[in-house]
Image 1 (cartoon, rainbow, N blue to C red):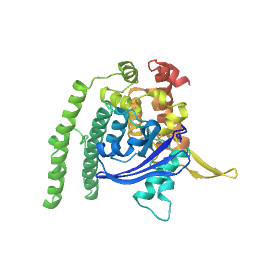
Image 2 (image 1 turned 90 degrees about the vertical axis):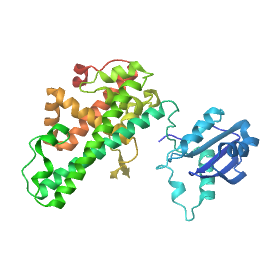
Image 3 (image 1 turned 120 degrees about the vertical axis):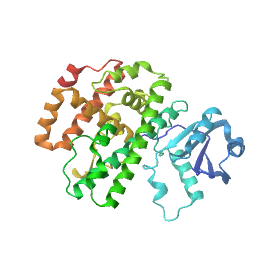
Image 4 (image 1 turned 45 degrees about the horizontal axis):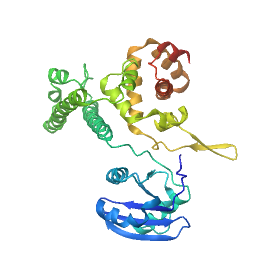
Length: 349
């Protein structure tokens, strides 16, 4: 958890919504100099903060509407801080809660140096990252539909499918819907298959667009990620745009924690009381490392032996998690040092 510690003459907390925004500006002594509800309009925002712009910092939570405010502050050269919503418990724990109270709490946390920061991904590359995330969302939806077909097949005690349903040719050859007798079940499966076929077309078009249209600004990092066994163009782009700048992580522990590759423990009086929350970190980066591990297992017999050895002690899921964390550490250091993936060094470390 990182906190914003810089001192300013004025601190602006913004409780931001899609159509409205509540501003609270505190001076260095903590006195409220502006408390106003406004429409979410750039001109109105700039007009409201104009008297305090000489030394002002602006902050809002990292909810869905923050893009335009961050871009506006960058354009106007106003310091901007993005608050980590899951860490900002002071807002959600009060007896009363409304936009006016929330905006003042944000400003107070900012002024006191207690505001936990999220990373405000810069404009220009953010759009590519979001497109890659959209592709990932569609891939997950397709997998869920295929899983539903598999579950239905098991519900009616049908023989297992001989080939993988993820491939359109296999689905067509096996005539999946015809193996069920009830017409309602056939219709349900046919609906799943129709959506899967549509998603195949959309995902294929997105991947083709990404391969041709995306101009990789950091080509060195991209090719370093491609040097990992099994990592192709799309997965390398996903890792590249989710990491963005490896230097924003001071330690390897910060990086693998951000990627959800470790579970920090909670302790009190020298005793373990549980584990940290699973949802703090980058879910897309965690998925990407999970995919990279599966691809590494296909390419490497050493990886298979590593997982088999860890599986005897920890189980299959934990063994894959340990390999993902090991790969995360390797990626951190290879990007930090500007070197390609070294297979020999990876397994000897």
